[in-house]
Image (cartoon, rainbow, N blue to C red; front, side, top):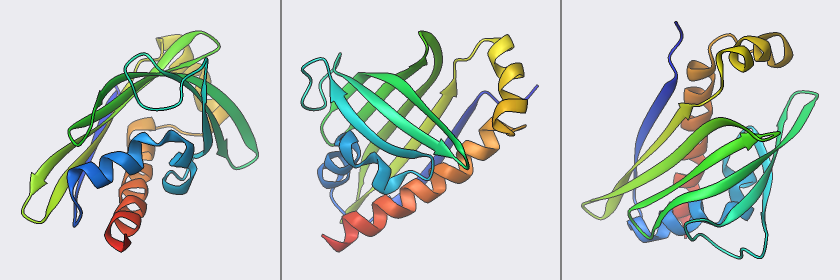
Amino acid sequence: MADRSAEVERRIAAAPEVVYDLVSDVTRMGDWSPETSSCRWVGGAAGPVVGARFVGSNRRGPLLWSTSCQVTAADRGREFAFSVTFLGAAIAGWGYTFVPDGDGCRVVERWTDRRSAAMRLGSVPVMGIHDRAAHNRRGMEQTLAALARAAESS
């Protein structure tokens, strides 16, 4: 059975609060993520608080899709996390933790697969991804590299 979770860690030479502010501004997620093209707050939400909702627009090659997300953790400089659904079905949990480390911080990005067995099986021919954990791990490495560039240049 394929892994149903992935985790990537990177040290970033910026304060945890600086990196948290970049990650939790979901309207900038398209700047970091290779698969998410944009996000927007919905339902009156304007920022990262537990319960706030946002819609994510995603792209993989010619495929385009949107997800509904809800913030599950919003502790500035410590943790930001959200759950993701597609057409009302749970598909993933995403989270970031920030730990002070000298003049910077260690950032851990994690993903948990919450798709049903049928959805996991059905997504392979549609998405062309046989190992979602490995695919997401590569994307997470790109995301954290982009975050590091932004955080370290500010």
